[in-house]
Image (cartoon, rainbow, N blue to C red; front, side, top):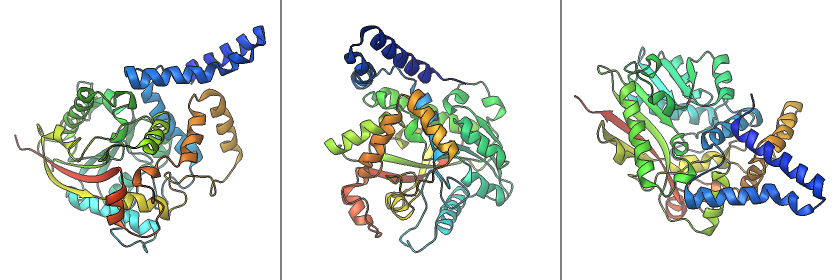
Length: 367
């Protein structure tokens, strides 16, 4: 099914071809570039995007489904692993340690009811299911939904914000003991709302209200969050990297350590916060097939990938921006200029990194 952004982009390309064919004026071949420049100006100056930002998020996860090998069930997913200083662990152990940490902090047990918002390929839910929890996932991506179906993980493909707007969450409200938001919150506020603090706070308030609605009044009542936060003012290098990420993944990091959780106070108490930034950074360094790694040295070509890339070159308005992300190593530069260090060095990361990833545990307030 063709998408809104694809219709807009194909229309621009057809208009370019038509004008060039009629006039033989090579200047018209610059029309797609001019269109992107004008859209960027509106995006950052007016907070408006011609392209649908939620569709951009869906598309980046579809890319991960079709192009990244070993994207699940192999000790690594679209998040990161937990090393806690021991980088001799293999990836399977480091991932299991992360999930065990989450299980313990949520106080889950056999029979607990768990829902994961933005559940990706389902590694966390699969772990919890194998330990006896009753699990459910929410995912924006049809492609990842197909993987979840193959893994027999109950789920619904829907944007969480649309689900939150329903009367009873399609029967999901008041059905769970615990809610998790793992490394997806940075997509909830689109990049064109970077300077709109009211929109940011309204989005996060809606998110926490949604989490509260999902929780059973008589259940455990806990929420576990993993989310990157921007903790330093960006320099030019980081701003260029941010632009490339805005054009591909389209998101926003909450500003400051309290930028997110200050909006939870109506329903939740903050029980604990852990800085796991170094675990995130070192996962990309140690695992050559992690999504944060730049380059294609380990990329394995096949016919389906080739066809997907050729299709994307034509219909994806931001395909070439993905190449810029790879060239600039845009994801990793936020961890500082020495981000490729192969040693566990949280003190350097703390000094250099422009972002921090926090594990956050919230406890629902008693009525």
